[in-house]
Structures are given as structure tokens and as C-alpha cells.
Image (tube, rainbow, N blue to C red; front, top):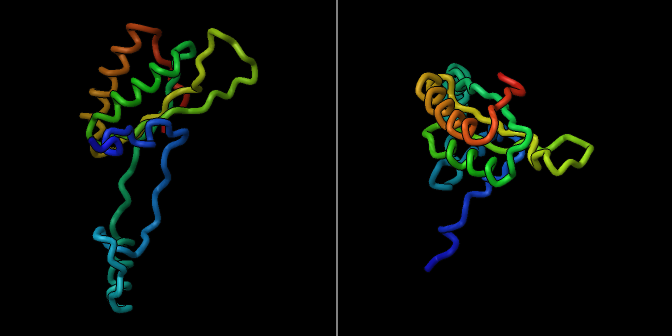
Length: 141
């Protein structure tokens, strides 16, 4: 049995939202881009005219929620199409047994998917909020 394929994706413990990745000039098949300069210019001009997708993002917290539950919520949200999420670091300088080990949770999705995603996200967060404590919004972008 191949245990490599059964491992969780490393993004589960992501601390901050991923930034946009620069174009590497390689196709999806991994072949190098050996086109002419005209091809490169055409690609650059078409990329400049296309609008970048707009992401909606916000950060939430539940101050006494355990780390394991934060991870469960993040994993649950990641199961939704076009939703990315991760954990925020704890910023408190004081140790408190009742305080969460995590500072919060970030969630983001494309604006074009907002209607569907927001309803599904709210349903999942409500589920956990009823079982533990209500969520507090830290930041919304």
C-alpha cells in the first residue's frame, strides 16, 4: 500500500493565505516554453487584457476552540469547490490554558462563486459555532 497518497496535503497547516504564483513560463506538462518572441508578446498582451480573478477573504476566530477542531473546520471547508482556508498563528504573548493554540482561521474564495460558497461556508461555521462557541470576524476583505 502506498502511504504517500494517503497523507494529508501540507496546506492543512498553512499559516497565511497563499500568494499568487508567478508564471514560470512552463506548460502544465512541464515542458519549457521555447516559443518565439512574438508568441511571448502575444501571451503577455492577452494576459494584460484579462482581469485577474478577485478573491473574497476573511478571518475568523473562536477564542477557546482547540487546535484539533480548528483543523477539522479548515478541512471541512476545503472540501468545498473553490474554497481555500488555513490557520492563523496565535498572537497572544500570555499563556492561558483556556485560550486556543490558534489565532484564527482564514477563508477565501473567488468572487464569482460568492453566492454558493458563502451559503455553504456559513452552514459549516454555524454547525461548529452551535457545538462550541460563536465565531468572531477578525477581518474581512
